[in-house]
Length: 231
Image 1: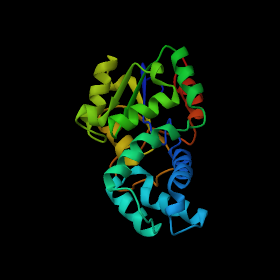
Image 2: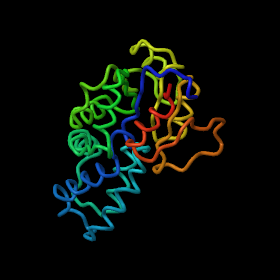
Image 3: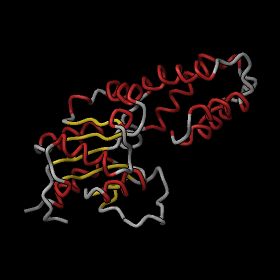
Image 4: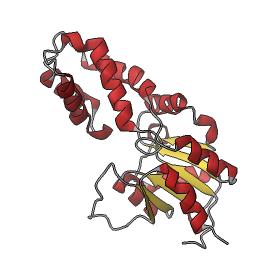
């Protein structure tokens, strides 16, 4: 793939540019601060374990998370489901934590004259707020959130929409993400060079594709780019 000219790099948000696991831990601390006195369960480590398990990496409806927390934390006088959802939307984005190397890698590609895009699944209010908390909005030429786009990863349509806004062809673009199906499979199906940020999800061997490249940290992207783009 070294002869493949690259004019754009697109990124996933959660667990790629943002360290979602660290963000969730910050959120849990705030949840304990705001509601902990009403928890029948007082073991702090156990509370963390319960919330992390209920959240399941963000791939679970907040309604289900809410009902698990009410039961497992033995939460007396708990807020309503709607109030909990509002609490999550207002508090969680402010807990956003950058992944290692986030700012440096975005600056590197900017310096190379590469156009930058971001594609994320999720609610616009939450995802857009995270982007602002991380302070990276101005780095991007295109930001696509699934709720606004009307389609979500791994649907090739959301990748094509991002490419159109960037004015590049799939063969000229990389996509970097942590999720085997949503990110790697989705990007490959749309014709992009797919970089898998491993370490969060186990690879899904049922998938019909493999990543074009694998990294563990964002700091590995600059050397990868320089290696593949040697003249």
